[in-house]
Image (cartoon, rainbow, N blue to C red; front, side):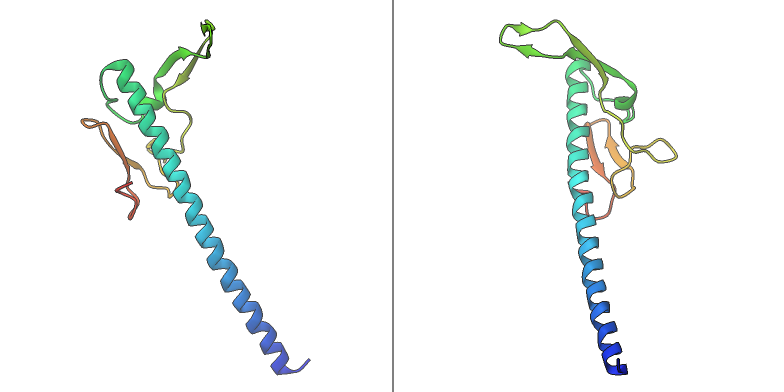
Length: 128
């Protein structure tokens, strides 16, 4: 194998590595965005459920992780089955060292208790 062939092989391998790395980064970003959308929907629905049952917004977003809600487990054609389930308003979420719920990018969510609004603090995703 000549020096030219070796250099050509290294060049092709470098191009493939760059393409694969950029694709991996794009897929990672898309996955984080999808997780952020899902997380925001879950938190917002939990806030709405809390507000509906307690006639107020949670004082802190972590209140959703601490308090439990009791609801009918199944409603069939004949009505409720009589069984119930008890769960937290918001199921297990990733938190930072201070106990703040964090988004998929590792930044804490911002919560306005007066309005009952939650947002990401990650740059570029604040308006989601």
